[in-house]
Length: 323
Image (cartoon, rainbow, N blue to C red; front, side, top):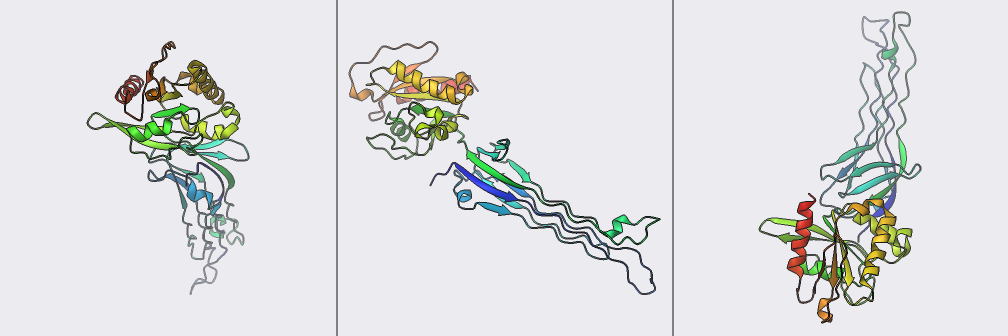
């Protein structure tokens, strides 16, 4: 199951309490203070695991709590530091503070990690407070409490190319033909309900990653048809490929509607290079004459393979010119 959004509560460990103790050794009748400091509370760390592709594990594990640091002991012994909790997340995970709506971390690299809440520092034992005027302090510090946060985890898939289109435009069929991805394909709208990633190979040792997101509808930027959940998966793409059914009544209007939904979701889409692909060319013998400044328009048939090599070539050209 693909999960790209969930809420999680986390808490780091409290610092251990300092110790009040005195030396009680033979021949040392008035030994000085010897209480040690408390140990460090456990951190909660987020770490990227490149083998993960969903937030499924977090969805069913709603809270994480690190252990507290150990208390200080006599003979100036420091309490044990608590172990950190490591939460593994897929690349592209964004962590948001639910209360402030602030982005705390955006983990895009395969080696990324961050201490999302730090464990509390251990309190000082009474040995720390001994001075020339107070040689036998009988007090210590409590450990500092750990941090507690309520977080929102959002996953934005990382891909080079994003397929954009209305439901049943042929996006899933296309990605299944030019990559090893096997999305569900059927002749009705909203067959695709979660993003699909496919690796498209070209040349001898080169490839790019293509993302097929569920079809958009008008008003997607306002959340209609879960559009706001789907649109964020296009934010990291380098190239946008608009897939439009060649038999549509007004192809230009469809492109403008799709483009408007993207730009209303985020201004970043205005500067992304794009390509328009007219799908299902095998169903017609009349090719429309269209022209949009600075945008290539090509027709393909994913069923019989027409235009697929040209499509890959065009995408590679755009990727390389916008490296």
